[in-house]
Image 1: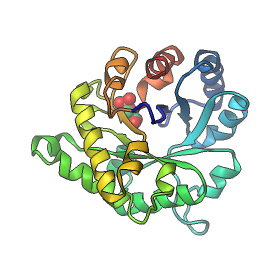
Image 2: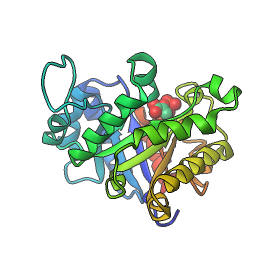
Image 3: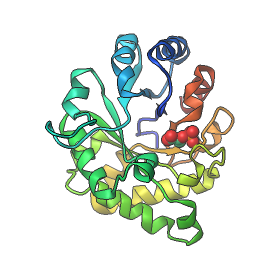
Image 4: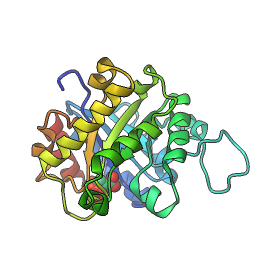
Length: 252
Ligand code: PEP
């Protein structure tokens, strides 16, 4: 764990206008400046330029929440990887459960998007995780291993350094219901073992694996203390600068 980079990333989802973005980032900059972990804010496309400009010269990095896999063309409403890099974006969330649930994202399209992000030189935050039904049916391990394997198809060991995996049990996202620290660690460890089988121990030891799902200022320290939990992907609690800062401090 000591070898790995702790990364705390905020997923703002479809929240904050440009004016609100400016206020939140200005509040966050002084609170995050001494962070002992990497700090990322994943903002709506329309706020990327504002966020990149405001965070120049700070330790806060900017991410997008999705990215199309094709370079250009007749894909109305989509945004390409080069459009993001041109803007100074360094991270992209890929395969978030809301994209899978509401926008028809599949393991196959997640794999294509992931590769487009890596090829453009950005870091992908790849989200995997089971639904409540999957957990109740006892297939969490198989399902998360399969999501991981398909998403990483065709990704070289070298390119794996441009991937962070976020374990996000769908039943814990936005529900206030957090996985216990042991549950979170168990699946993060399973993901690491899956990656070791696909690549090798060196690759899996170096991989940052986050937990996400109702992580907040009160529960972050315990979740982040676990050996295979290297950071967090935070939705709701990333919208309040003091709460997000508390989580950053817990990871530092
Ligand atoms: C997320 O959107 O990835 C997430 C974990 O949301 P929340 O923290 O609100 O559960």
